[in-house]
Image (cartoon, rainbow, N blue to C red; front, side, top):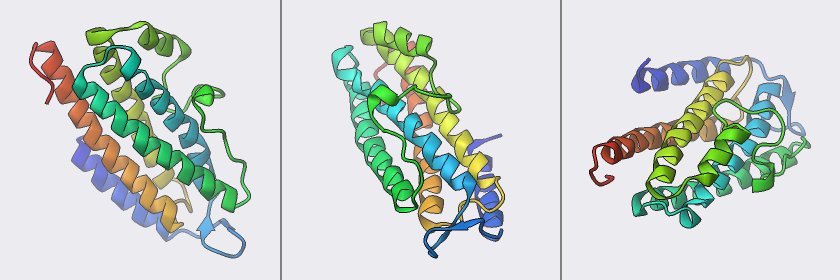
Length: 195
């Protein structure tokens, strides 16, 4: 399935899920569902792992292009972790720790690196770090897109405006970054400079 088709399918699923009856309400406020809570609680450690991986760029000899990408990932996903924690806290739900030490605690969400993959990335330096980082972060981002698709395919999910907008943004941002990372990998393998 092409990325354009995936985005259109997500939009259709989102429209369908927004018309389904709500299963819960936050203190009489906007509706939210168990699928919304699962998405937010799963995406926090997912983002924490991305922040951990990206945080290694400066100490592992990453190229300037990969370092710039990593800096954007750290800033964006740290802000998003704070947003997800606040959303859960405001609804009286359990709030996972978003620190790097919790980046791979508990069950792995789609696309998350195993402990072995994290160790392999941590051992890599310079061009090998770049290659592994890009390869693993593509896997990681594809997992986040799978999580968005699962959310929008769940009955009653994504009726809360904040969840809906956040999930659509995650899908768009990570799809765009996947395309960029594929280009960077292609440039690296051809010996060219990263775009």
